[in-house]
Length: 346
Image (cartoon, rainbow, N blue to C red; front, side, top):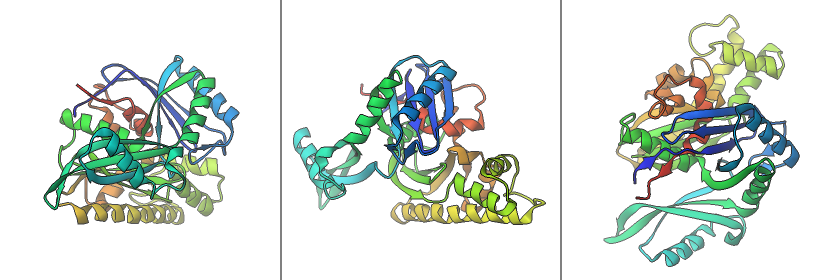
């Protein structure tokens, strides 16, 4: 179904940073803020220090002049379980019960403790019987309740909870509607976070598969620190300023360490791409780099050369609705921005 932009406030709360965006009704990015969270504030999606997160949310709102009110929270992590199911075509109530029964085998505790959401992605024939293709997402109720309480104390009302995979699917479909990216084939999004990298593939616009990689922006920073003896902050600055992937660098050992980390990440990315290729006849048409790690100088060119597919900064996905020049730094806001789009129910 068609996707449309909306006027909304959306939050992406990661292990290291909080991102908040506000959009206009035509999808333009009106306000945004990135706020570094205190160390250990969150662990995956578990809130460790409520007061610290509340304070950070209030600070981010104040800096960017966001008003109080309803917001969307976009989540990603190992506690979010997403599965593709093929199920009989049944009335809504019976279909949902089938979904709960199927998902109980994937969940570590009783399904009663989870919010279970689904959407019908289409139909497929199995043994000449038409079946639903269903995409199911689950999140622990306690986790959602904890976020709801913290957001409320920070002056925000949790209206919608979305997953990064689903939010990005909507943004990709909007870009396809606008002719910004191809409508067919595979699109890969490589979200390089502080503690992990998430590789997601979308097939003909629909979410297909994701995988977490332990290599991340932090492991690259640590590699620089180990070779130079600099502290983490100085190593982070070096990573942002120097192109350690393309051409020669005076410190060949530091350059080699960074290249080795990126090559190890690429090895895992290729495994996900190969999984997709082995099951689909359509090619991967492009990869988009998101997250803080996407700002590593030379990374797009280096990955494009080794993956042999077009690799672009994810800020390009903002261009369909934001007519002015889009900063590469917007790749950091991808998940929050994508969560402001909605499927048109008309």
